[in-house]
Length: 362
Image (spheres, rainbow, N blue to C red):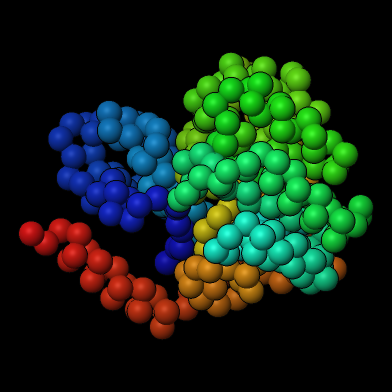
C-alpha cells in the first residue's frame, strides 16, 4: 500500500478521484489508474494529466493527482526495498535542514508577539537552526484585520531577532498582505536590519508583474509558490514574477514527479527551492525525500508536532523524522518510511463522516 496526501478540501479531492468522467480527457483519477504500472510514476502522471485535462490540468485536479503520485513513489520504494529518494536521484547532501514554522494562537497582539518569541526561543533550544514567523494579520488568511499591522510586523520581527540572536535564520510569511508593491516596500525596507532570509507571499498570487517590481526593489529576497500546481505555473513565477525563492508544496504541485521537475527548472535558473509543507507527517516525509536529491534546497518547512494546533499533524504519523543537532538524517527505511496511526485515523474518519452528514443533509 502506498501513502500520499495533499492539502485540499477532502470532499473536492474525493470527487476528483471518484468521478466517473464524461469524456476521454474528463475522467476520474481512479478510473484512469486501473491497469497502469504503479512502478512507473512519471508515465502514470502523464496519463492522469492528459486524461483529466478538461476538468483538471491545474488546481484541485492536480492536487488530487499529487496525492496519488506520492503514494506511487511510496509503493516504488517499498517494492525496491529502498527509501524513495534513492529512486528519485543522487543524494544532494548528507543530511537535511528543516525550519520550524511558527504560528501561535492568541487573543490579542501582545499575547501573540510574546507567544511567537517563546516559540522561536523553544525552536532554537530544541535544535532548529531556522524558523519562519507566520504574521498572517491581513490578507485572505486573516480572520480579523489588525490595525497598524505593518508596524506591528516590524516590531514582532525585531523582538524575535533580539530573543534568538544573530546566529539563527528568520523567515517571514505575511500571507498576501498587500495589493501593491509600493505598500510592501514601505514595510519590507525596514526589515533589512533584522537579517530576514525571505519574505513569503507578500502580494496576490496571480499578480506576477507586481512581484517582478517588488523583487527588483526589495532589500529582502521574495518567496512564493505554495498554491501553484505544475511546473508550468512555476516557470511563470520565475520568469515573469522573477521571485528568487520558489515554494512548491509537494502534494499541491502534482506530487514528487512534478515537484522534482520544478526543482530542476529552478536549478537551471539559479533559484533556491524552499518547499511549502503545512500539513501532516506524510507531507513532511515526502518533502524530506525531495530535499535529499535537490541541490538548491537549503531548507524545507517543518511544523513541529510539539507546537502544532492540528491533531492531524500531531497524531496521523507514528514515526516522525528526528532532528539531530538541527538536521535530519537522510531517510533510510523503504518508501516514504512512515507508518500511519490507525487508531487516530479511525477517530478522524468518524469525525469526517459526521461532518459529511451535516454538510449534505437538508
